[in-house]
Image 1 (cartoon, helix red, strand yellow):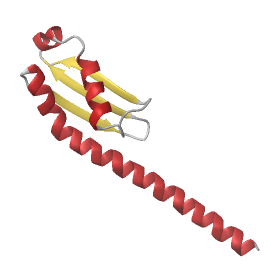
Image 2 (image 1 turned 30 degrees about the horizontal axis):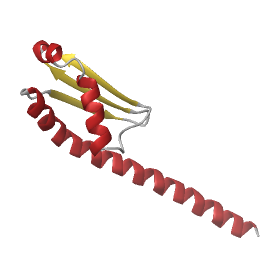
Image 3 (image 1 turned 180 degrees about the vertical axis):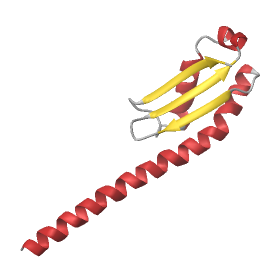
Length: 105
């Protein structure tokens, strides 16, 4: 009886770890694709290629996007545009712990 319970607990633990690794893999893959596509998307809209810094940790995900001050003044809703892009193409990254920062170069 104890051997069966021990086996069930080990299998449950391994399943939980495997699920966490799979979800982390999906997020990492989405971050790699986002790093390639987001600058092109913003360049098409704003006609300037931004500086992009992506960070992913266990505590959350942060996007830091740098533009010159003229572009920031011209598009004051840049944060909303990026969030809509993420919702449309990368829903894996949308969550409570996502921070988007727009800064001047």
